[in-house]
Image (cartoon, rainbow, N blue to C red; front, side):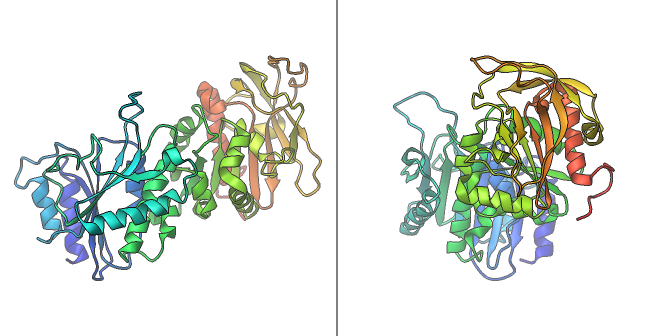
Length: 456
């Protein structure tokens, strides 16, 4: 089928709210047709992976992606099933794959949650499922989170019933892929879906390499300002969702969650900025691993920007053996558990040039962020103080007096990149803090003008 006809069919499908959302990637060369479906009611890792794989380039065959619901029907001239049959030009697809997510942990020991691949009732589907499990499990360290073969579809999947929803076509070969929600971030689960799909499409010779699993930013978004948010073990609290909400509101900005395996696989070449937010700095370092930390250093050295908030600021420091070493800083005390409080911050003159939005002073949520001082490492440039704490919290026998007038926000350089580190949590501190977060992004994106792109 010609691409122009496919495009017309796509327009007719997406213009009808009762029909599934459908996209088609056609290589123009002979090869298998693979249909991938998700439940459109889901808003999770399956949907994230689904959006990303739709932009993968193919060397052979066709990839049709459809998002619908178990009850999606069209009462007009054609049913959803008939529309997909039109798209398939009367031919049966070679493979049908559903991306599915487990529900949150139910606490029922009799029905433990598992990451699974359920193959169709053919030897080829079963053999392929084992191949895919070997590939995805190569990145999973915990045996309890490894994928296993399942003989029955999980509850809630579109293909769980003997006959799936009427809009889903039948295929001789099928796979139902379920990732495990509890204990795993959305970015990790989305990567598992992408890696499984990349392995399948490479096995079927639709794509040249499984490296496409690390393609997170679509080609049409590459000209925008692309932000990667670390979303993996060691990241906690409301930092990631808060930053997603604030930064995604900016024009021509995309914000994507990434995991340690994404970074180790080279995904940062698609991004302009990496942000590591709250949680545990040492655990984030462990999540990245040595290869991931080296990838971050290289990214910043070559001109990428880095924003660390709380734990992400610890991670940036040169004064920790596990740190990235991209900020010439160390902690004033190894007793870090100072407590949680709302503390006043005062911008410095340099800070006023960066935070052009928001007040000169603001009360910001603090939760055990670093109290830093210069580390005097000659290979790393000195940082500039943008804001100071003007009060302190000193619980749990932490030393008093060291926090007042200490840096709360600093800006450094590492190679060609900027390193902005924030000890407290302005992204979670109401309008004033959110204005600072927006202004920080605009400074990193445009420079002091706030309106024009930075020159190299």
